[in-house]
Amino acid sequence: MEERGQGLEHLHQTKAQLGKWGWLWARPVPVLSPAAEPADPGLAMKVLLLTGLGALFFSYYWDDNFDPAGLQGARVLLTGASAGIGEELAYLYARLGAHLVLTAHTEALLQKVVGNCRKLGAPKVFFIAADMASPEVPERVVRFALDKLGAPPHPRPPPQGPAPPGPECLRDAVTRSRHLQVNFLSYVQLTSLALPSLTDSKGSLVVVSSLLGHVPTSFSSPYSAAKFALDGFFGSLRRELDVQDVNVAITMCVLGLRDRASTAEGVRGITRAKAAPGPKAALAVIRGGATRAPGVFYPWRFHLLCLLRGWLPHPRAWFIRQELNVTAAAAA
Image (cartoon, rainbow, N blue to C red; front, side):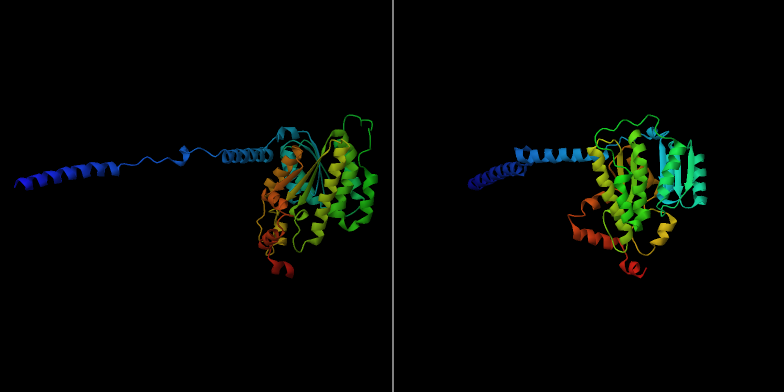
């Protein structure tokens, strides 16, 4: 009985010890967390560098110095103002208090736009019905605008160094490519005639182009040719003005499909791309011109597509095929 009692006592002691160690084993063991480990200096430097580059990219592309009040009293010659993006631009400029000369080839539509602009608060609105398919029309339009809105109030400064580009250096392009009159040569002629006045007033040229002037697509060869010509011409002219210290800003606007009825009907069943709201596109154009930005992309994703143009040709072709109903376009 004594031995049995000793055995039971030993068993109880063993259970007590096991219970004690079992409790200790069940306690959470402190483990050194990754955050507590010494950081890799190289990794930290990479993160810091990427953060800095991201901040620079954000500040460059999102710097908004657009002041709508700065457009009050501005003198604006607006072509293609009877419909589409031209009409939207006219209304926004009117709301901002600009003096306007509007031109398009349909006088009845122009009169309607002029009336709306006056209701929206434009101090002065003039119009001239003109068809840019006629080579002599741009000169008449520019003279009309200068007569109605006035030449720059200060005298033209004496020339220093090479004369800024004018009609003489642009005339050869006009004689070589008459078939691009509407979508390219009229821009060249208007610029040639207006450039002396713009030089005096330190004005701006806002050129409304298209995505098809940067990224060619199918079944649009004549239109793309004209828009590519615009990009090349005004890109070169910008460099010429820079080296001659001529303070005339050139803003190239790359726009997509707009939500006007005639455009939607013309591409119905051909493209799957969604049309962009006209007023928003017009505001992007005005904002870019007022801030003298070199380029405007609306919608913004077009900027990325233009950057990828030469780098990734195959994905770009794939993207275009997704936007286009090839069978319907070929049939049209």
